[in-house]
Image 1 (cartoon, rainbow, N blue to C red):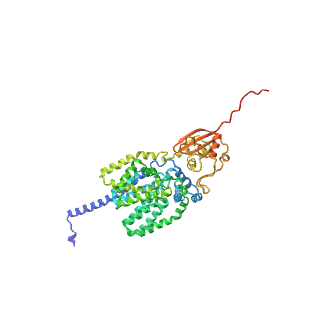
Image 2: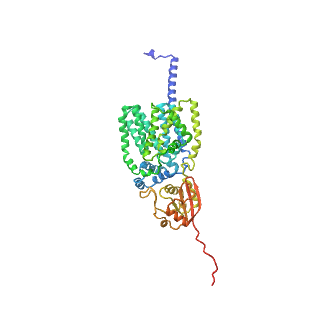
Image 3: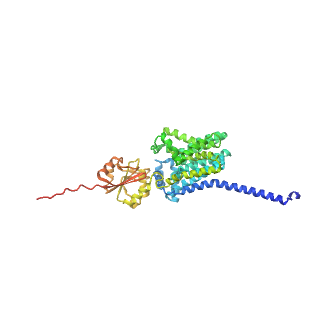
Length: 503
């Protein structure tokens, strides 16, 4: 027994070297594993917080601001009439703003964090199913996409939908690998949160169902139960949102042109949209692991297209939750290149999207320079001035932009608003029926309308246009990005006729 424990010095050296090599190898693998998901996530976080405060809040973000900062009773009353479909997001933001404030950065921080988490999950999905190289390339591609930063900089629920779509898919892959009740419960919770973030994103379930049938048919019943329970849990909210479908009545019908524009909007770069589509189509496969990405990218897109034939709902941002699938497909192709060529490709992507990243971080990065309205009014307006907006279909954004970006001392009197927006259950302001009766007799009237207009009064509403053309003249017009602001002053009374009076 003792003799068996006696080992020559050279033998001990070999054992020590082997133990050291194994420890080093394990430590190196752990380090690479951490770096593989953390580096793309850090890149996303840096790009997310970089310039997040620069773009003005556009109309939809202004809706988030005014709803989330309203008293909770007013918020709940408004949700009974409008925007119930994203009511959970407003409630979340109500609590978030109560803690972190309502600055642009604070309001957009949840979206930035969600996109950062989605980046890490994209890496995790690629690594788990196709190897570390696919995961890292996909994560970096995702982080570099301008649209990812664009919607990370938006106080709306789209980034959260991307995160929960990636989380639900990751948890599904884990369940397929190791089926368990706990895993299915976690998956069901992720699907529930996905639906609460955005109903349209539940189209991902079609892709998940076919994935389960293709990869683990024996799990299909348990998967159906988990998915069905999640959907049933939010059915009341979906029903309320369906009753308010007039909220999306402004969405135009799906046309070939709008379909062609979708990839550019979805990626945020015309150059990258073509590259991503070509690489994605090359990677389409009905075999694992590309099957997971293929179904995720294709089925929700087809589903939204079919729905839009009957009910116009085609907005590229509604499909943002499919972007991780597209970058995973592209990464599958890029990973076949040698390391140096793959690195050159990623560097080229970084160079090509610089211009788009700069653009989305400008004051009008979200298409509307709402802050510029406040700059004009703060310089030229006084509180005794009046302000008028267009009719119901165009008053919302300009009115909230004035409320957000204009100092109280320079904020004109909203003479036509009888009930302010987000009060008494009204999503928009309730305006006086007769502009002539409610406008009063102000010396100066500001007119603020969306779009760039040569005639700011054309189409503003018959009673308003008649009143303003008869009594006022346009003194100055500011053509801003997304808005037209005009200052109207009272016309001078006719001069009295002169002459000598003879007795």
